[in-house]
Image (cartoon, rainbow, N blue to C red; front, side, top):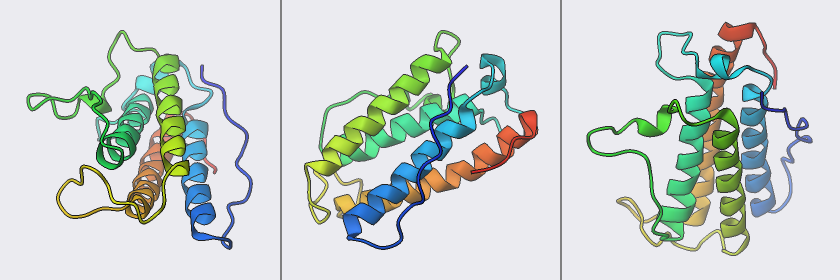
Length: 168
């Protein structure tokens, strides 16, 4: 069973751009961790809605989304991903041999690596490997806020369906 992190402090709506953007993203990251906390491994793997998304799969996908945008696209690192052309949704699926703790650790590691990348760069720095059109660190952070917030809506519905928990 994964432990819940403390509820994040109130997210600032004023301050310099970097502080506000990073606080918004960290807020969403913490809420995602709180959504998966306190459930059994079986519940984390359940797909209780019409979707095939589980809470654990959503956490795994979020880890690889951080890896993609911050490490691969922005920093240009040569990193691996679970998906293939034959299995493009592998990052959404927790495998039988992957534990909740391993996936949570993967997520936390990718979040920490992304924080380090952001700390070492300027918001206007361009991505080294933009997927299509030019992209800056600012654009990636804004995208990740939107991406994570959208998935929090999925997590809300899944968690409420499993045990009625709402909040955050």
